[in-house]
Image (cartoon, rainbow, N blue to C red):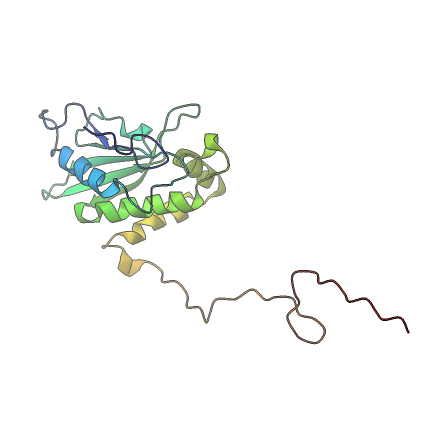
Length: 206
């Protein structure tokens, strides 16, 4: 137990099922994954000043005793028929004055891509989350707004481009040569016009 990142607009301590590691219905022990996420997120230089607090929960049981759908990110560990482990990733849940259940955005995330996928989702939230209104700063509000605008699939599912298995199929950014640049207004002589008004010199009276 420790008190690191137990407050502030950062990734809070990762939670799991209170019966984690002691129940027969779990496909695996979720505690090592919670500890890995905790070590990765503790004092993370990029996510220390998020728009609002951020909470992650992990469960490995068919019965969701960790309540992952009321967390900012919920991870449901599953075992496939071939014996491999995959994560179902839920994003955008929360309680409070605006209770929202998290939505499933990835159903078969490999173990190797877990941290890179979490990093991608957090980068989207850190970039597009609201900072002007504390009541609308959580990721659940951003996800609901994107769904209303039709951007949910395009923005959140694109976060999977950070995973190792999906990088090859992600669109590459255009080069600077093909990217249009903004032009400054020019004067009649063709020189760039200054953005600030300069005082004119007084004319000499003859």
